[in-house]
Length: 558
Image (cartoon, rainbow, N blue to C red):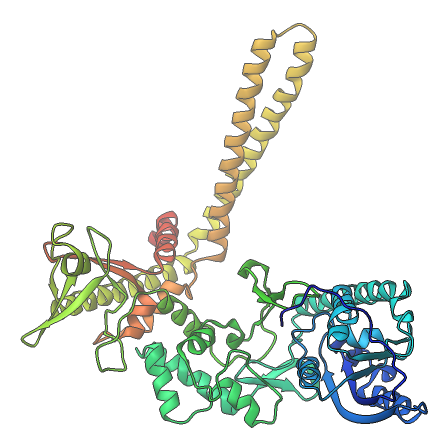
């Protein structure tokens, strides 16, 4: 609400009897409730205020108007306290002209707000303010006491206490986050708090089934909007409504009166590592203890602890979804599923994605720049869908054969007796290089004394020193390469290499699916002459296997 700048005098006493419409203001902060401080409980504050009201024996008339309670709400800002705001509206409506609180800290932990309300707002609206403890105030019976220097000092102390408490709570929470302990008031959709451990999560099977469906549908080609429509048409409650239906006092601040599923919610679920069993916290940070606006925190500053709870989605499916989310995908008009190659095709010349067209029942792909922007900027790069599908399927089948062949070769290498002699040979080479390194280091060390004794000029000393330095670098590099080769030899080829494992799964592949493309293909370039270039995933794994076979080819022959 707007704050008037002009200040007026304190509420004047009159000889005429007054009628006081009394409101109790009670606040219990989250910090108070965590500390189990019964003296600050809502019940205790209410008893104290009622006792004050029943002991007013002057000639004025006291009528209890209402009670306003902010339970579990910070006092450092007035804007975020709903009961406090309702009380202000009641004052403006003439229903309340006397506010009673246990102490100033219940009303304000912000020094600026305390000064504003006591010295301006309550005075302008002719409200009597009574605080019973610490620094007692009664702006009607003792108006000068309300201006006592101790009042602003108490306000500063209360604010300082709020700041220290906020900082201490944040440190405690960060320690819990580092350990992977769940500290949120509510569990993410799909989970619920463990009844036996409030810092642990267990699967909520009813909601978890919806999460699994969302991942399955997305991998099956449904767009996020199609998933939204499907869930809403089936009457599946969105996360906020679902929590409320389970009796939780949950309120989404951005929700409408009748919240439904939306694309943003689907996107957040698909990206959330929580569903693979990793605790992810600290994604948002309150701007300050006084300004409760939440800012987004960079991902590198999040608190992520792996394998803290049972996963709803396996890591392989989750990884596929993350790959798919990066792609520029378009859904078929009037359909719920994406086209087979949506997000995979690029023009080999301009690099833009390809668009799909159907002409007389035949599906073609064209360069998007050529078709939608400028024919002078690029050319057609046209290719038929059936030809493209056959070509990609052929390449993947060939890779399956390659993977099987590599598997056989690695198996023979791992069993070859010659590997032992090769390991002995590498040990000897490493020992020789280490002796050479020690000798060069000794020569380098003796250079200084030769220079001091006058046996070398400064120029010769510098040239020889730099030469030895370079020799040391080269020898160390050679030793590291030999050790890496020995390590590869000792552990043998990895039969469960991601490349080998991925392709062995599709040994009998007879048709393309989006699931296969997501797992095996990075992107496909289409050239002007209709030829294609397929960038496969696992290229680093393929290279390492080829190097292993090359290094150990003699073992296979033996």
